[in-house]
Amino acid sequence: AAKAAGKSAYQTCTPALRESAVSRAELIADLRRAVEEGQLHLEYQPIVDLATGVVRSAEALVRWRHPRLGVLAPAKFLPVAEETGLILPVDRWVIHEACRAAAAWRERAPQVTVAVNIAAAHLRRPDLIATVQAATAGAGLPPCALTLELTESALIEGSDAVLDQLRQLRELGIRIAIDDFGTGYSSLSYLHRIPATELKVDRSFVARLGAEDPRAYATVDMVNRLAAAFDLAVVAEGVETDAQHAAITAIGCVHGQGFRYGRPAPLPELLATLTPVDVTR
Ligand code: C2E
Ligand code: MG
Ligand code: MG
Ligand code: MG
Image (cartoon, rainbow, N blue to C red; front, top):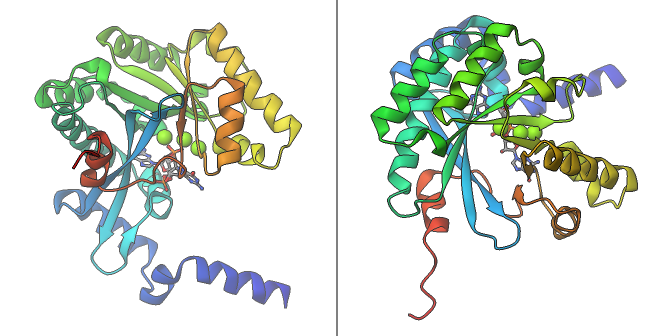
């Protein structure tokens, strides 16, 4: 019975995939076409200054409007994309699209930067720099307005060539964030080597702040102090409640991201949050 329950629970998690019985091979073939046929799009989630609520940046998050399955979240297709190498054209498209969007919104809100997620496989490719340069220059976006988000695990496997590439990106002015910080099997020693500009505190730690878990509080506090000592900016991820907002603010985090401030949304919705509402009308 437990096995049956587990199975049906799994199935209700992925009704679209089950009903249309899309095989892995079909998904791969579909994904191959998705970039060319313009089926990918980006949503943008604001990263706010906790003291003022002002939007400082926006993270681009990819979605796939599949012709039969509807809109798929990254968890539904990025694992397959990573296994097949299709992540490279996907991430390339994301970098170009996000740079174009950011260059446009900065005409209204010049201080608002953009962040994109970069897969580990991409980091190992020597052409990442060329891609980033082409995207920023092509869009007319200053390199300092683009942050690449990398996970700890991507950085840990980093060879000297990867570190070298990261240093070159930094020299161009590109910002580098360590995403989901605290969840990898990292030793702290790599922080000395990675030329990062910011840490994103993983939302699993932030989630426990609401429950007034003293250890969760200590963890976020420690990451915040560590970041200060390394001269890195901090973003607390996954802030959903007022209690979590109060806790990260008390700890002294400068930036926050999460449903409390704004969900990932299409570009027009982000733009609306960048233009202050005229309350005099
Ligand atoms: P991430 O980079 O850590 O992005 C944050 C994820 O947390 C997003 O999920 C976002 O929707 C979700 N989130 C934000 N605030 C909250 C909150 O308050 N509560 C909860 N429960 N969740 C929140 P999403 O969009 O499903 O993306 C999942 C992951 O997929 C991302 O995690 C990132 O690692 C990866 N990803 C997304 N877009 C891309 C991309 O273009 N390229 C690559 N390589 N990876 C991507
Ligand atoms: Mg991210
Ligand atoms: Mg993250
Ligand atoms: Mg995370």
